[in-house]
Amino acid sequence: MSRILGEVALLTPYRELTCQKIGYCMVVRFQGPSNGSGWMARMANELEDLCAEINWDEGTRVVVLAYPGEAFQLRDGQRSPWGEPDSASFVAPVAQIRQPVIAAIDGDAMGLGLELALACDIRIGTDGACFGLTQIADGLIPSDGGTQRLPRLIGCSKALEMILTGETVDAAEALRIGLVHRVVPAAELIDTTTALAEDMAARSPLAMSCVKEALHGGLDLTIDQGMRMELDLYLLLCTTQDRIEGITAFKEKRMPEFEGG
Image (cartoon, rainbow, N blue to C red; front, side):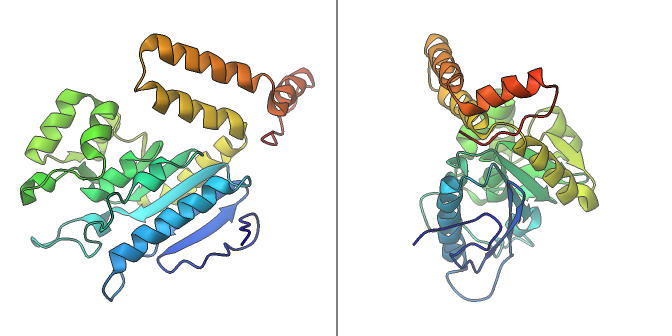
């Protein structure tokens, strides 16, 4: 069955997620914990299906993943009703989205809530929030990329301290160490995030995908291999219609209108 995101609703019905299309931006919101068994499994399955749909949608250039950080917290010694993922990875489908993904985190982000944010490309948090991988308090370690992605963002030394101690950092410190990119009042979170997404969506979608490929793929390569990959992607983009449009718009002193071709 064909799937069209564009200006119409997703053909796949989602129970735990809501999706809103704003221009070339897809805003995905988590509904929050619901009653009944198997809730976490449904959420994981729906998120995986949605990420696959988005990857195939040429009309989506930037994804906003908006969720309440508190849904992942431990409360009064009890695990959050969001629970832990039943599958091998809850956040891997997010990390595999080819388009840029912006996390809009409302409130604290602990444990899996932070691991989900780490899988996104840009993270925007709210002032007064705290961030941490607190699994050590339960005799566990992060299981969905936290031990791998956190040190790549903030350095191994600080990541070891946070994970080994279960330390949380406040929003100001998270901003200072590069854990989040921006901190805004909660009331401004969605507006700030969608404004950034719309600004990014005006860029060439091919170039943005190549940026993600170069940065993420280059982490596992030597510097020389990474430089060759970067040059290959650059030369590939030189042959696209988007590149021609960029040059033409510059000469005509107007904003480019990229089509992704």
